[in-house]
Image (spheres, one colour):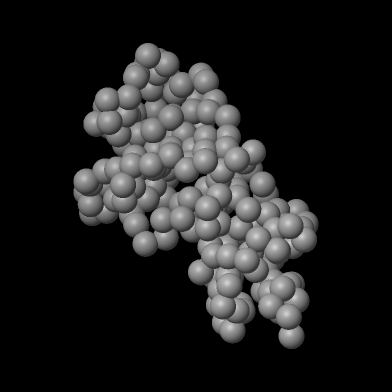
Length: 180
């Protein structure tokens, strides 16, 4: 069977609304005999079977996929082996502590290196390095099943803003004191 066809059949069977964002390594397991994975993924993208989100991350388009979480799902796959959590402006904006909403941009604290990942039309994922250990912040994190990431409390997001020397000019102090 042709590798592209094998990939398509595997994705039809395995992918669903909850599991449709894949790392290239995930897709390699679907076609173990394919020696040219990069070529196969390029062909799958050109054929419309997959959409490239960013380097190494692909979306298998399924009906009713909550595309608002795509950057979060991609971030979870990109740094699956690192300690990551949503924080900074992303959390503060969601809580209404800052008035500006980051459009197509999410910010995460990560045990990995700092880096901004360009996801083309989908937006950007910003990883900001932290030396904090999970035990140090466990009480300030909750798991968000929608985003498939840990999410910092407002208190932790403010701490992270200060630790990373981010501007606090947009922080609404009244709203902040009501939440912390």
